[in-house]
Length: 114
Image (cartoon, rainbow, N blue to C red; front, side):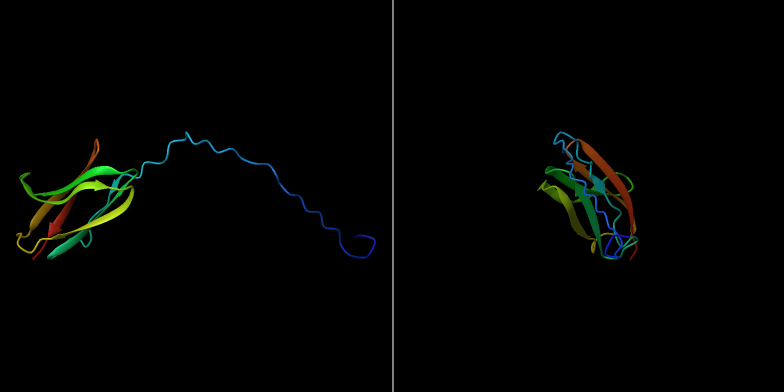
């Protein structure tokens, strides 16, 4: 204890700095998420993420590979996005949706139940 009867307290401060390298590659957040709900009736939401602004196309295909519709086409900014497919005039079945963004492509499966 100190002379006044109070315990001594020592505080140490770390005043060093850390350099930040701007050339470090940012994580690649390119992702096509599973639609929800799935299975769905009438409409479903499809979310995707981009690490940078890119031209994007999201298309829906049937089991035979025929394109049913295009849900998105154009430039999207970096970040999270969502599109909704209203499939009121489409028959029940298994469908695939594909995200094309730059030189990357990802495909997922969804089920329409009426």
